[in-house]
Image (tube, rainbow, N blue to C red):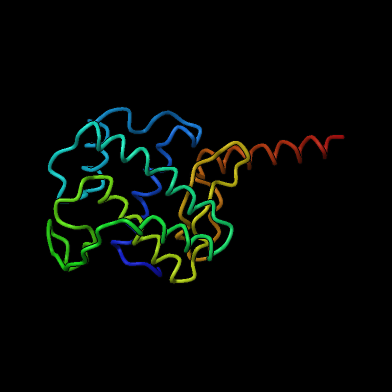
Length: 185
């Protein structure tokens, strides 16, 4: 794949974060501070000891800004949006090897609050996608009634649905039934 493990991991977190926004058509993915803590733990986001209600509000406010990058129609727009995301961030690159992971780069400043940490991780991962000329891998699900986002990491860039078992299968079944109806007429 084009991207490093760290970048792919950050992109997975971005997708989960954005899709947890009720705007994506579902329920609130971060209903309380405990849910934010679970999100942080599930993605093994390091160096975040405490999480507060203000952190939760700041992380929720980040989601629409990240969504805009997925909705960008072209690379120049995506680059502008990523630059806006990172413009006020305290980026402090440093090498680290923790929790069984080999050497990699952390971009967030030590002591960053969760929203700033997530913003920088997301912004850098999205930057790598844009710089690699792979912006078209950042998509909104092709199902007409779905607003979830996805990152197409397939080799042939064929992923169109946020989940092939739900959106993809539902549309394929509907198309099959329509073909069957048309053939019966």
